[in-house]
Image (cartoon, rainbow, N blue to C red; front, top):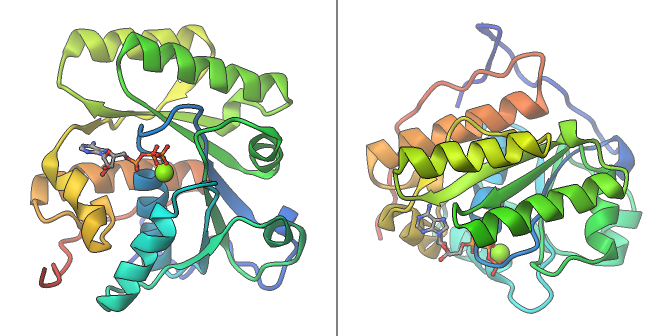
Length: 245
Ligand SMILES: Nc1ncnc2c1ncn2[C@@H]1O[C@H](COP(=O)(O)OP(=O)(O)OP(=O)(O)O)[C@@H](O)[C@H]1O
Ligand SMILES: [Mg+2]
């Protein structure tokens, strides 16, 4: 997949080799609640940056489930490119030097010290949320806790996920986060079966079968890429080969 930077083709915007973890370009998918789409977004981001030629390491921080590790295993077994280097979160993983351009942390739903540590060292913290009052309140409180721990609100990006298409709900959710001083991605992900089943086959949601879903997911991935590379990172919408089921 080609990446264009300000409409010019480039190889990589930022490439680092064998650098310390604090020099990496890190994304952290953080949330206090379970099931809101952390793994779905982490997998999508890892795939899209890897497809763009970045060396990506995806870290599964879930203390009980290993969904993202399993997802990466399915991907490898099925030969879906790019293969995503996915590892368990171990203390040693974040202390020692890793050779990569982007680290993506797929967080566990329980907020604890390791979440704050990873968030602090990350360049971007993506917080997915549903639109229910319960989720909105919990996720804004989680974002605020990050800020209270010294994370700049500018590094936090809220993503509305599993939306049902209500303009009122969308406006309410956006206003709620704006009042808290948090930015919300323009692209929201609707609740769709195609998004639900993609990970079961080792796919990212940008590799979903349906072109409309693929387009929405690509728009979100592009938007996130702009947050990682503010100097300009344009990713054209691409139709990918769908592997056999
Ligand atoms: N937009 C969507 N439409 C339909 N299903 C979705 C959507 N987003 C996520 N899902 C599904 O919802 C479930 C939970 O998503 P996911 O595993 O990404 O959440 P999570 O925040 O990582 O959960 P956990 O806290 O358990 O790690 C998965 O089955 C996923 O496929
Ligand atoms: Mg998860």
